[in-house]
Image (cartoon, rainbow, N blue to C red; front, side, top):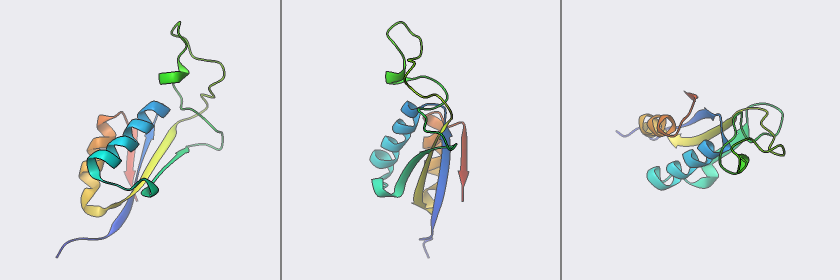
Length: 102
């Protein structure tokens, strides 16, 4: 009998770029529907992460002043329990600093 139970898995990233990459991998590699994936700051403040990346880096290599680097980014996904190891691996591959299941 197959395990069809659903669980929520959560990962925390330092940059919005890494969080976005994680979402793309979940959708494209694992077939997880976008409505089952959630992105939010880990604190009450709106943030682009805790480290500059992508468009948050100015042309001279410094961080832009208008990108609020005030906390980390959390990505969570509602997945079939059988997918936990593969999704954990994906989160780790794209730079998650913490991964947990619920």
